[in-house]
Amino acid sequence: MALEVDIEKRAGGFQLRTAFSCGEEFLGILGASGCGKSMTLKCIAGIEKPDRGRIVLDGRVLFDSEQGIDLPVQKRRVGYLFQNYALFPNMTVRQNILCGLHYEKDRRKKEEEADRVLELLQLKELETLRPSSLSGGQAQRAALGRILVNRPDLLMLDEPFSALDTHLRLKLQMDLKTLLSGYGKGILMVTHNRDEAFRMCERIGIMSRGRMLTVKKTKELFADPGSREAAVITGCKNIARARKTGEYEVFVPEWNVRLTTGKAVRDDLEAVGIRAHYFHPGTPRNAYPVTFVREMEEPFEWVSEFRYEGQDPASPAVWWRYSKEKRPARLPERLGISPANILLLYPES
Image (tube, helix red, strand yellow):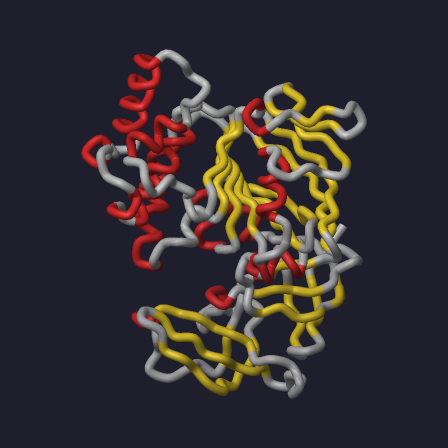
């Protein structure tokens, strides 16, 4: 399976201009609300029409502005799971799933396919219930079943866990990932939740203000987001302007510290980022005196804010996050950071 997207669309004052590809994988699009994630899915599905560009799925051209091609939704073979699942409230689970087979005229084949999907998604015992009687996870599986009976060439999930209570999300993310592990085709998911993207996706694209900034393997992205904006979206709490002072050295004026890096520094360095979990009192590299200013207790962690000796008084305090079991009897006088954990951030290309 191969999806190629290169499109532009203007909607009022918003401009979507994005290009990316997706293979037989779970690809996430991560970004803040309003950045163009859902609009991208709607353009692929045919719900929205781009102003220009091209969308190709498995060699089939779904949209090409130059050739005047714009396949209707029903011919694209793309499954789209909406945020609110959009189940028909007056129909049972089985009837909702059968609605996905409106093109199939053979009644026996429709019933067989419905049985297959009900078994796959563990919905057989719920097939006579209506949506109002379903839990959030059951409704999600029913909506997914209505899509899967069509055996789409691409499955798209639009914020699939946003309607669920927080305590249910992790379990349902695990359930859904297991259910889709043998799907064998491309899955495209948009989300504003970095933890959700990390758990679910093999690769993640960072989207901001209608542009795809970067697409990387999930762990590579969090280890090296590449730009200030990508670092913020992936949850980095400590970001400051920096300049190159050596092949493996930078100076951070706001913090008044010089840091040795694990990677060679490019001349166009813009900033550095340090994730709050990466500081350690026992790390000798990049260790400097610190003064703690305040802290906050969380259920399983502490968040402590500190300032470096000589730090610019106008700059924000630095975050250190650590588990409760590792809390020292006295907060340390120095904190270090491994060179490999210094994120080098460059201007967006």
